Length: 321
Figure 1 (tube, rainbow, N blue to C red):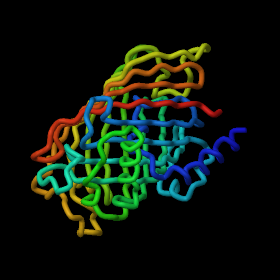
Figure 2: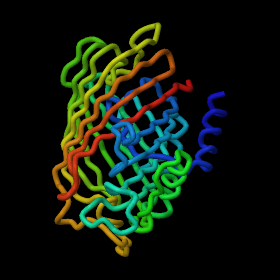
Figure 3: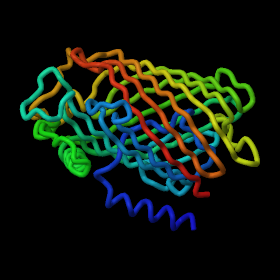
Figure 4: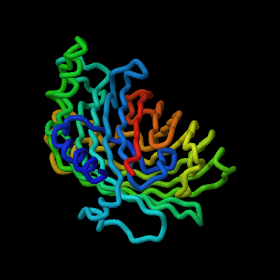
């Protein structure tokens, strides 16, 4: 039965490559204590009553021991611990502060779409109380990502304004990225409070950055530094807070691809904000094998003439074991 479900999900991806999104689900506040699950994550700045910058995304992922056989997992380290392997399909959509102008908006964010396939591994050391995750991402930025068609179609369906500026979007380019995350639990009280620190390093053609952060979980939850479920009834309810400081080296959604330099408009290197603060707050309710989540994210300006940005999202996850 599990193999049938996995096959259906993987085959279904072929028909939805125009709808997916980027989010880091490997960190502790996104934890699900099983090695086989399906997760759907939807984000949109509609939740903050805007239609700009990071404007929409959907992320679909599946975690299963069978993914260990995928070729890209050979790029991951062999380390002792509770190991999970996953694969995700992602899509990002970015726009300037107005999508109604037919002319270029200089000093604003470029239109950009990104379509990605991510393979990842999460390793939990239940003795040392730390987590180590690795991800390898391939894909495309540009017209081939289908972001223009998606936003135009959604706005037409909602009888909303027609996006006019996608002809100026970042041009097609290849995406190859590698990311390492490390988390260490600093304090915990039973399954009620957990505090940890994290460090992230990312390199590649889409995004180069380093980051440090901290997460706080409060409520009743499965410990992200354990492999067990917290109670027999399997009911969990909790809130999390994650703050992260980013040191940005390169961002192709602002600066264009590293291989193709013909995009009609990009943000110059000198106008990129190198220190960017990000905060995410979420609320999770889980019962047995079902997880429901709502969250809000906040981001400081990514370029000199940019503004603060807020968006929200929902997540549905289900264990398939």
